[in-house]
Length: 376
Length: 198
Ligand code: HEM
Ligand code: FES
Image (cartoon, rainbow over the protein chains, first blue to last red):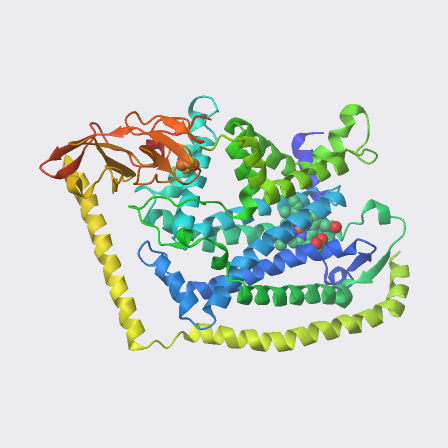
């Protein structure tokens, strides 16, 4: 069979568009079993994104994307604009919530092995949107233009620059060129802020919406997958409105908790004061510069292991996440088992989940232990 | 299987549907009103007192002044071969001064003995934070992840940085310290600073 033919057959079988009728949608059902709560997490991620869009648009009414104005415009929102602290903190906390939901969504789907045929592309579009979400987080972090924001960005760009240095010849410069494109021609300054702002409010959200649209289209035409333990014995419930109401109540519970959190715990309270001062090109970096917590799993290994190892490892890991539907099937075949029978997918998922959670929670401790007494 | 599901739905489904509907509707009503009120207030904006307003305008003018100085420096670096960056009399034994060099990157100048000064790039070779303008035990210190550098040679002494902070050329005339324009074309960008090898 020719390659083109195989590709088109792959696509036709993964996009059975005939299932895209009103009828099909209206009669959609969702499996009911012990683990059917996992079907709520995609929706929660999407709802958190909706919160981001709404609060983000509101913040745009006052935020000024300028080196002179950014810092004070954020202060102004928090101090003077009615409800400003609420809106800003909802935006900040909901971004973290979105990453949490996304992570649980990905991990539970990995355990449920929902990526299996014919849902490979559902997984792939999901995995790609995870990178976009991390990009959104990284670009948004710069916008308040305080010490934490600017130095975390400098460090991030420096890491991007180093990330390809080990490659041979001109390939080694790719990271530096990417960093230069993000920085702009005049070093870290107004152009950098323009670029990050454009990415944050327009390019990345548009990309995310595009990816998630395909993701949801695929979820709709393939229906929900059932984890193996429940394959033989489970019930179904209607999506409209049984499951839809579960979705809605999960969203409302999340929204309530989010508002409470945003009111009682403004995000700035968690940061040392020196990190929240306006960035000045003529001042030194304070101690305690760190990326957002969801980058810890990359950041802490970078502090103690050789950079080649971490950067290559991360690239392979990310590629592996995207390619998981195929890896989980074909890797076990190397020792003669079918993906269906092998323990490999579950073990691999466990290891990945544990490593990420451990690095996120205990990264600092691990670094301290590994450094031993090296700090002067 | 779907049929079985439908039977199920008639018995168990109905009750849970009512419970969920109530929860959702209650949540929705109370909550949406409160949020709508907040959002409306947010969009209408604050009513500032004139004291608050003038405070803000003053602050903005100070910032514009700072920006003007920065822009003047940017102009000067295009047209001159040396930039005034600090006064010797402003430095003391441990206290240096951070300035912006010809590459538009932070650099730092320290006193080096009685009458001379020494300038180095202030971009930490570890991950690019700006080093402190105060010496710690005579060493240059980056607070970001605690790297120490030798003042004379720039070599890293402790911490995660592994390569030296390069020296930057300066001249001193009267009391003024000038950064000297490096020879050759000046390319601006992150790649202009040395950093830890991978
Ligand atoms: C912004 C990001 C995302 C949004 C808004 C989103 C949304 C959704 C929604 C609403 C569903 C259907 C309900 C559910 O199963 O929870 C779904 C299903 C799914 N998602 Fe995502 N998702 C996102 C990211 C991801 C990621 C990062 C992955 C994996 C790497 C992923 C993998 C899947 C899979 C495999 C399914 C099918 C589940 C099944 O059929 O049982 N998604 N997604
Ligand atoms: S950036 Fe200076 S020690 Fe890490």
